[in-house]
Image (cartoon, rainbow, N blue to C red; front, side, top):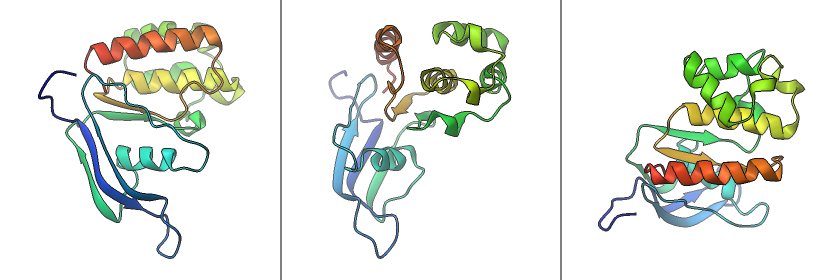
Length: 174
């Protein structure tokens, strides 16, 4: 982060509940994330991490407080990768986002080349995660929101994933 950088994504005193007569899930949450920053939300199960990501992505709206986003290119990898997998094979998943050469490069990066003709629901959990990650990365976001991104990944790919994140933040992706 450079001095005097402006946040690309911000929450100011955000409160959220799923239904009017239910308890608040988020209470007075504030945060700022900057271009090129790797920002992590940590906490136990049921503490509101996924809900916070849904607010940050714009999927959910707080009933009090503000979400401020200065980027039009925001992409999210949900906790369940199957939410992004809608085509009959991995190749079509990638081609639905980017043309052939870009899709092929991303398939290689995410180690999907041997899986291109397979139906996404016939893949292992880690293979589905890599396919969903490839789709999200092909969107070339300025802000990348990841909900449990290493779930199901083997240690070798986790190391590759760490290098992908370093390269992205080096380019200014938050």
